[in-house]
Image (cartoon, rainbow, N blue to C red; front, side, top):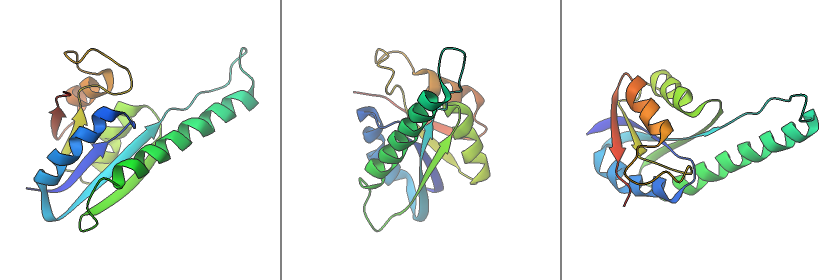
Length: 141
């Protein structure tokens, strides 16, 4: 049993399959950290700052909604901590895992990208290659 598990989510239906696995792996007094990472655009010659700001606000709102949706799937008797960060998903997942003292990252093979189910999603692949702790890759049905 793990005392602290990180469950990244992008709000996709695939991420919901991880709830059952996490519930079986968490210690009775353990903590589940639900993380959503919002990307952040920067303005360029082709995009106004106002438009970029609006897009970034939308991305951040989506991340908050994804975390809230995932938190609601767990029983109230479990300690679940929501976190929303801005950044590059794989790098931010690993940074949060390290800073929070996580023992296991549970991540689905693919998410919003719609990648064929036999191919590991790019974020999951990067996490697998760069994480310094155990990673459980959940196969999508």
